[in-house]
Image (tube, rainbow, N blue to C red):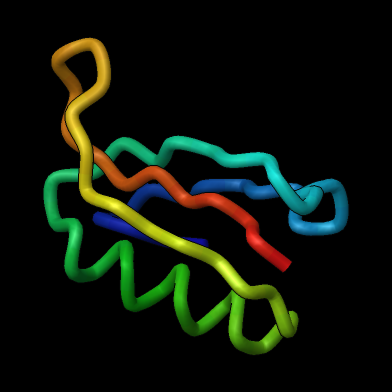
Length: 65
């Protein structure tokens, strides 16, 4: 997944129900659109939220189903 010209590698195969990951980014709208497109293609049900963790803005993604 490429966001802001940076390639982020997410091991979608190991993204288990109940787990989450944090993706640092400045343009949350771009990141959310790409995450939603990918998770829809994979048939995942996710919840996303724009957050600041340890002073870094980004998106947290939880897999629900």
